[in-house]
Image (cartoon, rainbow, N blue to C red; front, top):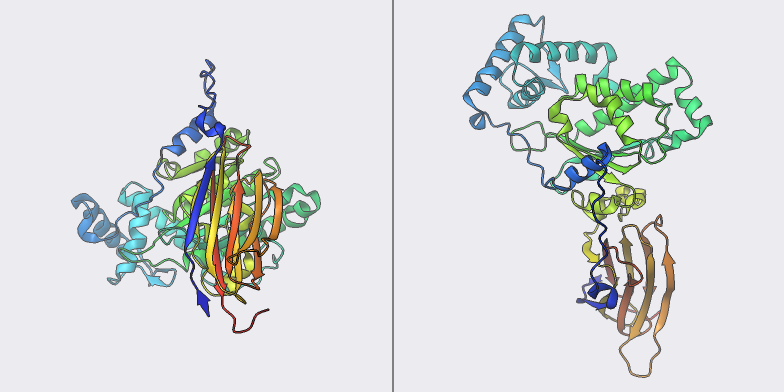
Length: 423
C-alpha cells in the first residue's frame, strides 16, 4: 500500500549567491576546435523533431524521387527484397520509411540512393545480419559495459550507450582485438547491439524511427581503437542510414579534436549536425536535457540501475537544480508510524554535502540522523536508502552546495509504504 506525501523545498542562500561570479576577460587566443564544438552544442535545442515519413508532407520533388527509387528497385530486383523483415516493394508504408532513409542519406539523389540500398542488401545477406540478434557471440563481459541499449529518451527514442574505456586495460584489449578474427567477431557483436535497438523502432509515419547514441570518451585508448572505430563507423554509415536521431558525446577529453578529424570524413554533413558535445564534469546536466533522470544510468548521474530493467517501469523522478551557494532541503511529509520510506537522490557531479534525517511530529521526540552529513565525491552513484518510522513525522533530505559557486542538476524520487504494525 502506498501513500503520497506533500513535498516542500526550502532554499537558503549564503552571501556567495548574492555576489556576482568572477568572469575573466575573453582570451585573445583563437578558440580551439573542441571549444567551438562545445559552444555550438549549447545552442542546440534538446527537442529533436523526427523527419517526416508521411507521404503527404513530402515536397513534390521528394515524392517523385521516392517513386523513382521504387521503380528502379523493381526493375533491378532479382527477387523479393526485404530489410528488417519489411518487404521493400508492395505498398507497405513501413517500406517507405526505409526508402526515405536511404534517399535522405544521399540528398534525394535517386541513383546514389539505389546504389547505397543495393550494397546494403548485399552486405546484409553476406553478413547474415537478419539472424544476428539470436546469436551467442560470447561477449557477456562486454554487455552492459561497452555497448548496450538502455531505456528511452524523453521523446521515446531507444538509447544506445557506448563506452570503450575498459580497453585501456591491455589484457582486455588483446582478448577482444588481439587479431583480425577477434576484431571481426567484435564488429559482429557491435552490429548485434545496434540490430537490437532497431527492433525497437516503429518504422511507420509518425512513429519512432531512430535511436539516440551516447558515446563515453573517458579513458578511451584512441590509438589502439583506431582500426575498430573506423570499421564500426564505416559499417554504420553505409548500412544504417538516418538511424540515429542524435549523437551525444560525453566526457570529451582534450584530444577529441584529433579523434573527430579521424572519423569526420566518414560522416555526412547531415550526421554531423546531430552532434552534442559534453565535456568532463558536465555529463548529467547534458543527458538530463534529453533523457529523464530515472532512465539515465547511475554511472552517468542518473537513477537507473541494471536491476531496474528487470522490474516494472521506473518510478518517475522529480528534477531540481542546486545553485552555487545554495542549500536545498527536500521535505517528505505525512509519514505515518510504522511506514517505510525508500528514496533515491542524485546530484550531477556531487562535490557537496548530503544528509538525511527523520523529524518526528510529536514534541519532545528526537530527530533521527538516518544518514549523517558527508561529502559526496563527483564520481559517486545515486543514493538509495530506506527507513522505517516508529512514529509519525517527515523525512528531510539535505543537499548543501554553499561551498561552491557552480550550479548543479539533481533528481530524487521516493516511495512510502504503510504498515499495519509498528516496527
